[in-house]
Structure formats: structure tokens, C-alpha cells
Amino acid sequence: MIFDALHELLEHIKQVEKETISLSLEAQMKLSRFIEKQKIELDDEAVEALQYQDIISQQLSATVEAIEAIQKNLQIFAQTFKHDERFADESVTKLQIKLSDVLEEARAKKEAFGGHSKKSSIDEDKIEFF
Amino acid sequence: MANPIVMFIDDSETALASTRMTVSSMPIEVKQYLEAQACLNDIQAGVVPELIITDLNMPVMNGLELLKALRELPATKRTPVLMLTTETKDELKQQGKALGLTGWIVKPFNPAQLKSAITRVLRLPA
Image 1 (cartoon, one colour):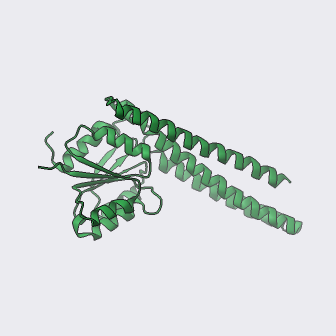
Image 2 (image 1 turned 180 degrees about the vertical axis):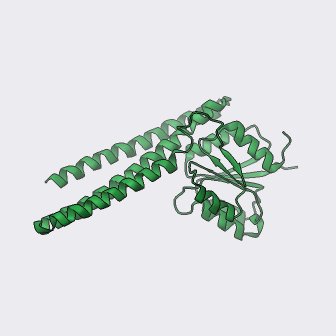
Image 3 (image 1 turned 90 degrees about the vertical axis):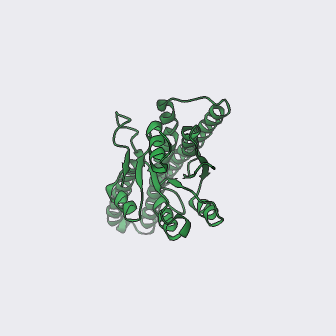
């Protein structure tokens, strides 16, 4: 029962995130089309701001992936628990390890997909030639 | 004389729109692709780019895989390639460098810096 409720809750969060990605893309594309059609010249800050949708989308997609991994591991645990409660303790330990792995991967993706969006200076070492 | 062709590859439509708006006043011909394979198809069909700017994290074929494929094609064996990505890991930069990558630009890019990088690589008049 508790697993079904958790699954439902995670599914809901996932859907909200997916809809947010979709809505932000639609909004950004409408804005971009308008700017291009009207031949509006943007300053550097505005162009930079336009790029945030891509970063938001990547960050949310990474958390959707993390939620899917949690759902999968919860499902495995629920099946084991249902099958034989004696294995529950062992399964909880395995679940904890799996969830820690999911969190670690999600944090790495947050770092990887963040780019310079949180840096204070926009001129900070962005282009590196080899 | 025709303007040099610059190819942009990114699975994000909004990222492509941002680069398109940034370079619209430059003397270059812009070609954009949502997936790496479409860019390779154009090159194999005879389109010769003078600069390729690609995202790294893309489904199916990522930026480093694209770079490797480009280096295997005679037409793009030595074409300058810039990686435009949110990634900042040195390990990935080194992988790119080993494959003959020209440079690394971190998103969100500063428009003046992107234009300056294109001008520099293509040796356009400043």
C-alpha cells in the first residue's frame, strides 16, 4: 500500500516536471520566433537569459531520470517484501544503496548540466582554445 | 565569394535559436541540426562546413562521438570544431582535445565571446 502511494506521488512529480519542460520550451520558442520575426536586436544579457530554458530543461530531465530510477528500485523492493517479509531487512539495505547511487548520479548531472548559470561573472573563463 | 558555412548541432531548439540570433549579423551561412546524424548526412552529401559548433550531451550521438565521426570523413578531417556545452569537466575536455577539438565554450555563452570565437577561428575581419 505504502509503495503504491509512493509510486503515485513520484509519478505525479515526474509529470509536473515533464509538463514544465514542455511549457517552458513552448514559451521560449514563441518568444524566440517573435524576436526573430520582429528583427529585435538583443543585448548580451538577454541572449544569455534566453539560454536558461535549455539548462532548466536539462536539469529537470535529469531529476525525471532520478525519479524513474527510484520508482524502479522501490518496485523491486516492494516485490521482494510482498514475496517474503524475512528478506525485508536485506532488501532495505539494498534499497538504501541503490537510492544513494541514484542521488549521487543526480547530483553529478546537476553539476554537469548547470554550466555557468550560477556564476556571478558572465566573462568567467568560458572559451578555452586547445 | 560565398560566406563560410558554420554548422550548429544541438538537441535543444531554444539553444539553436539563441545561437542563430547571436550570429545573424555575421558574414556566415548558418546551418542548424537537432541531431548529429543529420549534420553528417549533409556533409556526406557534399556540404562543406568551415566550422562546426556542437553540443556535447545529445541523445543517440553525443558531441564527442560526432567529433570522432567528423575526423573519419575526408571533408572534415581538419575542420575546426568547437564544443558548446554546460559541461565543465576537464576529463571531457581532454577527450575532446585528443580527438582534435578546437575549443570549449561553456553555456550559457556570452554572445560577444561566441562571435569573437567564430571570427577568430574563421579569420573573419574583426
